[in-house]
Image 1 (cartoon, rainbow, N blue to C red):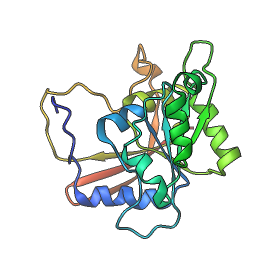
Image 2 (image 1 turned 180 degrees about the vertical axis):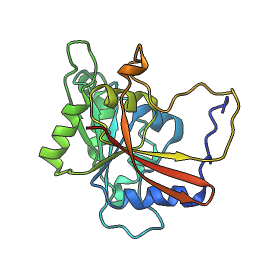
Image 3 (image 1 turned 135 degrees about the vertical axis):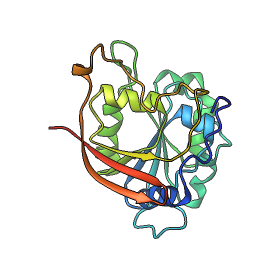
Image 4 (image 1 turned 60 degrees about the horizontal axis):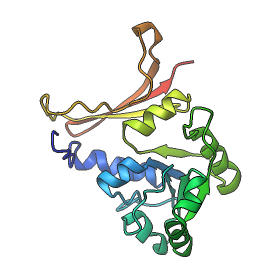
Length: 208
């Protein structure tokens, strides 16, 4: 909405389906913007848990609040990794030390030539160092757009709810580089449609 309110657009059944997905993946990736806006927990709740997913925050500038739910829940057995730029380790030394003391993984990645954080570097590290083979992204448009620009989105789960917000919001679900023509747009294939009450969940896969 115009005030940033977003809870809840989708219904309880749709949200429970997301919790079931959280309970099956190795990692859940989000961006610092989502953490600052929503203070999410990103754990699977009220569903059978097959594995406890590692929560991963892309936070190049080291802005993760020390009192956020993600940090507080590490002691309860929900692992957390925070990905930063190398300069953060010196500039925010006390913040860095506190996170380590609380059991948080803090890993640094060099930006690319344009000064941008490279999401693929983080994903490769998660595979090699934390044995992650399945990762789900729950984030806002900035991180999703960056992953789209890097060609890292292989499936999209799109929830549609019969909730009209009017023209009070201009936030797009996915940011990133805009295309100049429809011909340049990324194409996805619709694989599955499921109904949750009045909501719909659409599963798309990247076109071959």
